[in-house]
Image (tube, rainbow, N blue to C red; front, side, top):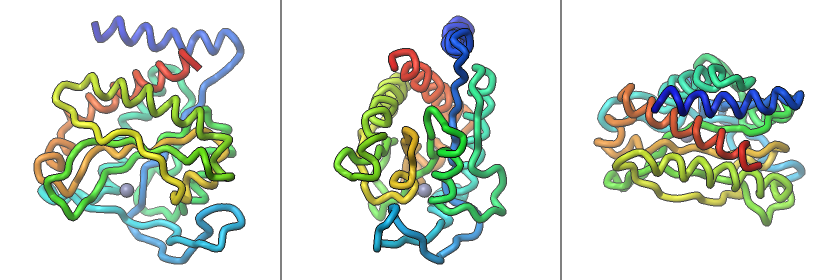
Amino acid sequence: MHSKRRIVLSTIVMLFATLGLSLTICIDPGHQKEADFTHEQIAPGSETTKARVSTGTRGSSTGIPEYVFNLEFSFMLRDRLLEEGYDVVMTRESHEVNVSNIERAEIANEAKADLCVRIHANYSSDSSLKGFMLLVPSSSSVHTAPIYEESRKAAEKIHASLLQISGIESLGIRVRDDMTGFNWSKVPVIIFEAGYMSNPEEDVLLSTQDYREKLVEALVTGIADYFLTK
Ligand SMILES: [Zn+2]
C-alpha cells in the first residue's frame, strides 16, 4: 500500500514536469541556536516591530530544544519531498545561523516557492494542552490577502491528511496576522505546529522516529493533494 501510494504521489510531480512545470517547496525550520533580539518590522511599512528571531521552546520531558526538533524534522521532510521529485529550498541547514523571519520569507519569495512550510513545535503554560495545529496568514491583512486563499487550501489538505494518523489530536487551522514570516511572504505559506513540547507525553512522542515519520508522510500526502486539486 505504501509503495502504491508513493507511485501515485510521484505521478503528480511528473505530471507537472510534463507540462514544463517544477514544483518548489520552501521549508523553514523555525528558530536557531542563538536568538537575535534586535528588532525588525512585523510587516512592510509597519511601525510594530518584533525580535528578528528567537530560539523557541524546549521539550519538558526530553529537554530537546525546539530549534533542534524543527531542523531534524525538516531534513526528514526535505528528503521525502526530494524523493517525490519536488525542488526544495531550505531557509537554514544548521543551528549556527542568523536568519531573521523577514529573511526567511524573502528566501521563499526569491525561490518563487509554490508553497512554504514553516516547521515549529508549540509551548503552553498549561502542560495538559496537546495536539497539532496549522497556522495560516490572514485574509483581512493587506499584506497577506493575496496569499490567503492558496495558503488556506494547502492547510486544509494537510490538515485532512494529518487527521488520518490514528490517535492524533488537532487544534485546527488558525489565522494569524501577527507573524512576520507571513506578512513578508509573497508565496502561499503555512506553519505546522507539530505538537506541544510543554506536554510531557507529546514531547516524548515528538522525539520518536516512528511518529516523526508518520507526520512527514502525512505532510507529503497533504502537499500532493493540494497541488492535485489546485
Ligand atoms: Zn516555534
